[in-house]
Image (tube, rainbow, N blue to C red):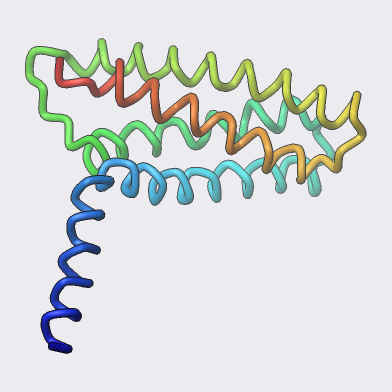
Length: 145
């Protein structure tokens, strides 16, 4: 009886993993990219006293190259020969430009207008930007259609 329950539990976990594998991999890559972005942002803002909006552009940009490579290989395992890497790169950058634009506007609103701490604002907009990125990558950049 116990072995059956234990097997069933692990089987359910494996089924959930298989069902949401792409999203789980995206989250892992996202955490890595968020760390790179946040560290870059913090160094530029705290040590070099660069304006927070410029820091946002640099921090976000540093994560883009890593994000493209990791998402292409690890998350979406894209091997589509018909869609060239140039086309995918342009699509990827387009999604990120939209996401970056929204994040800059949101950072300004949250920090300047609503007086939310810059780091809390950064955290909030990171979640929003990652949602935009996931659906953009999945449906357009690395779509197998």
